[in-house]
Amino acid sequence: MKILILSAGNSVHTIKWVNTLAKREHEVYLVYNKGHEPQNGEVDENVVCICLKHGGNAGYFLNAGQLRKIEKQIRPEVINVHFASGYGTLARKAKIGPILLSIWGSDVYDFPNKSIIHHKLIEKNVMYASMLASTSECMAKQLRKVMGQPEMDISITPFGVDLKLFDSHRFNNTNENRNIVIGNIKMLKPKYGIDKLIKAVSILEKRLQNQAEDTKRISLKIYGEGNQKEELEELVKKLELGDIVSFEGYIPNTSVPEKLNEFDIFCAVSQLDSESFGVAVVEAMAMQIPVVVSDVDGFKEVVNDGETGIVVSKEDVVEIASALEKLVMDSNLRKEYGMNGRKRVEQLFDWERNVNDMEQLYCILRDRRY
Image (cartoon, rainbow, N blue to C red; front, side, top):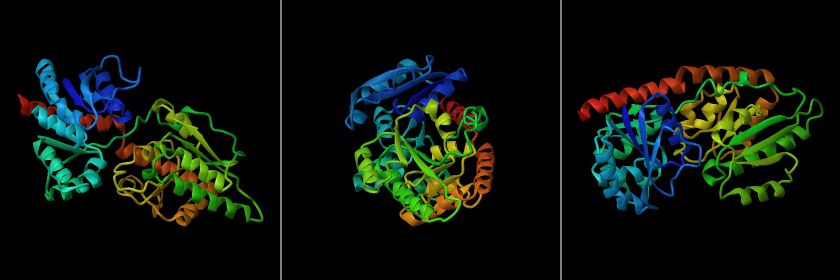
């Protein structure tokens, strides 16, 4: 099948989609605005990458003519546009189609609330699409709310994980006598609540120090880069956690399973409901790691509270600390939640089955085109 994907080439999610489709022997064209270029070597060699002339917000309008010509040249059987705001606007302005529009999160949670104009823009882009897809039920529900159409047809296409790659049995287990490692792999931005995690770990460390017997030792590993890094480093210094908290920097997606294997507990306390699915949490669960997550929409859909992990109030650092303490102090509970998490991912978030579902949508869209 000849597929045109209109999406940011510098997104790991985009790269995962196009690479998988190419490996399934589809003819894949990845088109993106200037400034959204993928890094060297990340995209499968069989994917044709096309960078449009203009970047920034203006590019979603200025690139319309070029995109229209590209569509005529390629003559794709299927067009899948990712992100309802920016690239949704570009597809509509270029008058290409029919399109399957995949919504991502902030495009339907945050963007429409900026102004009446932003809300109208999303309405136009969504109505232009022939088919709609969402990675989660909660995000589909949010889009129906934005559109004022409770019965709007939206297909659910979870962004699952490769169960062969995200498998703890691929790695050697480390020494049981080491510190219990709490971990997080996210961009260092306020949205992801890394400051809340650090403060919770500070509370937890004080509690553990006050225990007379069987004192547990913990450490916190934070992977990722972002504009909040200096602020977070200062917070660690202020709380005197330098011996416990380490910033490990950026890692490529291919290294994530290996780094997750270092963790005993995965903690993600994102602060916004635009965290509408939680890929990192699903990856941790696939690795049989118990999770502590905030009560944002996407996490509540992915995690079964009290079965695969613990759901906490996103702003309550004491509650976060207590959840972490519960898992730190109980190795059997960690093992139980980890095993349950793996089973849940196998049932719902197997990447190969998720791609099968997307291919079925592509077939429906192709049949509408011809």
